[in-house]
Amino acid sequence: MSDIEYYRPHDLDEAVTFLARNGATTRILAGGTDLMIDRRAGTLNTDCLCDVSRLVELKRIEIIDDRLEIGAGVTMNEIVHSETIARFAPALKIAASQFAGNQIRNVATLGGNVAHCSPCGDTVPPLLIHDATAMVRSRSDERAVSLADMAGGPYHCTLGPSELITRFVLKPMTAEMTLTDFQKIGRRRALAISRLSMAVMARQEKDRSIAFIRFALGACTPTPHHFEAVESTLLGKIPTETLLWDVGGKLARQMRVITGRRPSAVYKEPAIAGLFVRILYPLVASSGKPVAP
Image 1 (tube, helix red, strand yellow):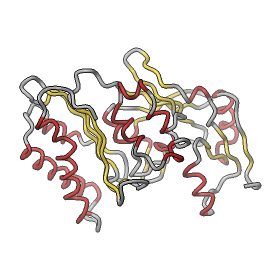
Image 2: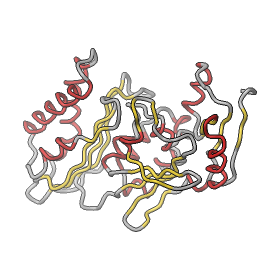
Image 3: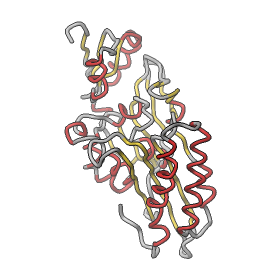
Image 4: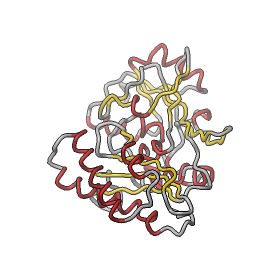
């Protein structure tokens, strides 16, 4: 890589100042897991790498007032071992624990996974159920960007060349939640890219009716998509297996409307319905006690 310059800023201010001057010809280096693949494939078209992997401003995991803030430079294994995330965003912890292999989890970052804008990014559904926004910094200002607005299409990030994701702001899970979970389907059990993923967070009343639910589907739509129709259909109802199969079928059909009829639909449509029933079935069998993932 001798033909590519390397720059490592000492703090966040230095990083955004550098990007303001050189962003158009620079790629951000955090974990580098996807960047190295591009390099080997000959598609890494850049003059310089700006290494932000050691910036302490990007490594924080904190509860601030009523918000959970997770730095963009936090790695998957740091998410897995964080007691704060285990308590306030357990579905994200589950997703991180299933992310690639242990070596990749040691370096892959939350910000990199989101900014890569892969339709199968495992951390996106858990972030969506927490209504997460990305805080994006440039030399001149800071702005909040939704995950949907960040992705202009598969593998196309809409952020400007002088901008850097600093952290994600989530609504933390409360103790009253009955269920929170993340599940995915791949070609094999380990080290597999997701073909389908789901995240859910829900709370039931004493009569078992659903009082709150957030649901997100991954790896099935070109950009992050929040299926509010699923939530509104289940809200206020007492879940049964029949109801879940019905809503799961509607979810599969809604996905087909978004993506069109693709060859993978033969597999994905029944898989969506089946995984939907599986991830939400604890609400059917719930005795009112929290279901620990």
